[in-house]
Length: 164
Length: 401
Image (cartoon, rainbow over all chains, first blue to last red):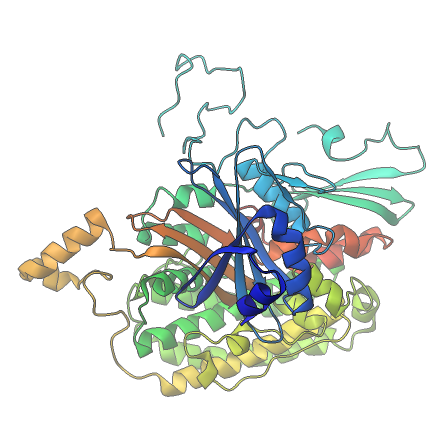
């Protein structure tokens, strides 16, 4: 139902949609994110449940930033996906949803996606000089260097990656 | 990480303010998290939380494990009620597969989830009371928590890291003595909750320490992404068991307690009442428990019984195929949420049809709640920070993943 409203109020914003196991998903471009958020917030989607991302390294727009909203009145859920390429920034939702603060920091930490307008975009879970972004598909599962320090190689493995 | 990168040091501040490092291993952080407090006298001017001390990379690990293998990792999310994480995760994968668990399996899942909810609330209320200085309530309640863990041990063979569910059902049926022992627990736990209430609810010292501390409006709570008891204490009657029922919760008779101010006292009252409502649900489950299978009879999803593997060719093949190649997963993405003790526990699964999930995301209920910590304690006293932290029920295993 919300998707028809979005189509009526922001024509052409939805570039793709699907409905799998009852989960409504729409894909929109990042320029349309803020108008969409304003609109669905008015429609009652006031609980921003989650922000995360998915890495598709072989795609041109490498990441999908995935938002989940819940409408507390109608109990409707909406998933919004915003494709972004490496180096592109997504508008931050911190001005509208306070909960976006830490979620966006986490996505920045683990995927390296920047959020434009975030007041304090620092790593959340890992430490500041951690090399790389752990949830990218090209980040090794074992963390690479055992000490995770750039430029420092462990003496016992000649700089090769430790086997997990 | 250096101190300077998180917050001001003593030298950098103007001298009137004092920097207090709260955590990472402080008795009232209950897990490893750190808060750098900037104080003016005893008033908190600034609070900068730093998390990640228990970050294990659960989501990254999940991408290299099969759907079944991820279950033990869910134990370690909210380790105070690990069985609920097992149930939540299994529900998510079952949603992706589009299968439904047999009736008895669902009932037992509800039964153990509610037991876990009680155990989790006991930890939160009891430990919150200890932190504030009321030690006795903790002792009365923790005896009941021990009983819950004994019941889990009986059902799953493990007290804390239960790994009780399997995709499509349960690890095994509950043993015969489980039901009479739970009946006894219902009586004893009811009495213990009453006893705890007699100690705390009308206690003037408890009132002084909790009323008005950490108060939050309903709009702010929603905006901060609160779910669970903390949201309900602020006056929003949102409970997924009623709002978006799963596992047949719509057939049980129970109420959702709601607070008004969202302060520590209301959160305490909501949790006490939720324990009573959980006891009600457990009573109903015990009354309607009927014999039957607990796991789906689908060899493409659930392992066949061991005796069949040893005696029948097809079962042996199914066993081999499931272990070596995993389940046949559809391509797609699902988000499935259950009402955990702390709030909405969500699992977002992206499948590319492979044996392992392409992406597995855990939406922890306490991360958004904890992100509001500075907002909650700013302007308050340092002693109140302890009360607020306890009432938020932050579980570092789930917060950091």
